[in-house]
Image 1 (cartoon, rainbow, N blue to C red):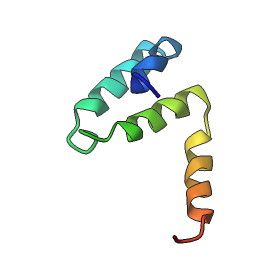
Image 2: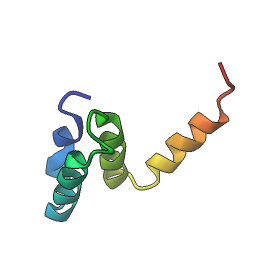
Image 3: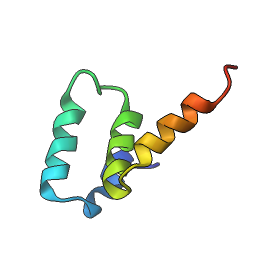
Image 4: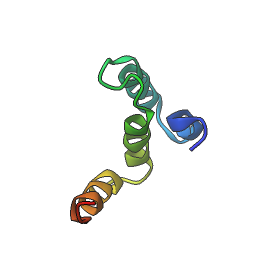
Length: 62
């Protein structure tokens, strides 16, 4: 998704934007925008992250 989580920022509360901005600066998320995007999508559709992780876990090993 172009723009990462910021492309969805207009859908979030100020607190959610602040949390994502803080996470973005954390070393664990630096260079890993996909994790921030997943977190942001969880705000838009609660439960999405859990469904996504369950789907990945159910896939056979390559």
